[in-house]
Length: 508
Image 1 (tube, one colour):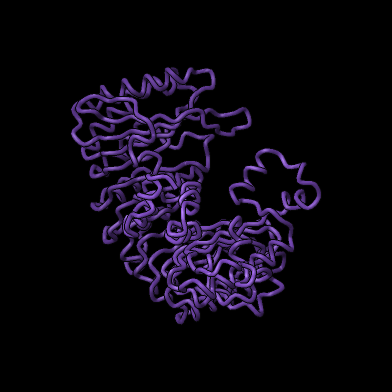
Image 2 (image 1 turned 60 degrees about the horizontal axis):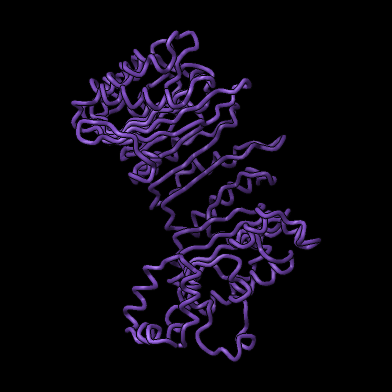
């Protein structure tokens, strides 16, 4: 050991811990430090196993006898987050001939996304590793578990693991086949998305899962309910009965995601459920219309504390039509088939009453083939909510417009500067003809943002996404541009220049 190594080795443990925290996820550096001396091994080894993937599983699965002559703490004692993943297609290649793997698959193995072994190896080592983690690690220190497998359900691999002892989990990801064979003997303590390529559970099973979750997961704060397609001859009525049951209450529920786009007469109604859960603040909803009439007010007792909401235009405006809800962020799916003759007047009325509204997203990703609103209507919408600080929209210019998107930019940015004096961040998605040079699009945005907002006091950022529409109607992203105000001037920026660039307004 040279003099520098000896000096480093002699540092107090407090400094070594600070160094390890600063290194963070640079595993190669931590590995190098563990090999410097017994002392640095004792300090830094624990950081190697705090956040692990499948590559660490063989070590975590070792018995005490197999670790000899090592006698220090078992590596499983340090685990705080574990990710188990198994992907069948590449696994079959591994079992047959590893030489058949392409470079991308080899890279995925090195990164731990694909296990270096076969089916039996995955099942045996995964179970042994989790058993050791449960045995050696402090249960309150384990914060996250991820399980992704195309072949086996969670119960098929980890059936003997007592998950209820893990009382401090804050991150759980489960992506696997639905456990039809083991459902009767599972102790379900987690809610998970029931969609996917595998056969979804029938409505009776899903209703039973909801009841079980209510009884055994009293601390549920977030509920995501995505209704699968019903098999032939089955009805969603058992789920509807749960939603309508006055006894079905999740006392701590604060956030609800509800998705039912089956589009038939059996769409589920959730008004009764919403009545019983007044503390929901974020609400994302695709389902049966909350009100039959366009933008008709929803009962004030439903979602009285709503702050963030995502919904189709009719439901979103219905929730806004009563100004009693403190909605700050609103995302509307602008689906043209739901528009009525007086949709614009209804929208202006609803938005005009929302004095708390600061972030608005007008999303028409469901239909790129139509221009959902004109620039003049866009002006009417923005004039109804002058307190906006964040605005995101899609600007589709009709093909018959002689100057296209380039000719509309002055009016777009002048409208923003005039109608939204508090605006800080603007995002716009545009489609342009494939033959239009992208440098022209970027240049004209830069020029017209600068001209229109020179005297605007609050604008800080503009993001532009540029798409072109293929012959089959598919939108293809061509470019993303970022602009920032620098005094009175506007300059071209990079995504990494501002942490806000690229982030959803719903997450701010």
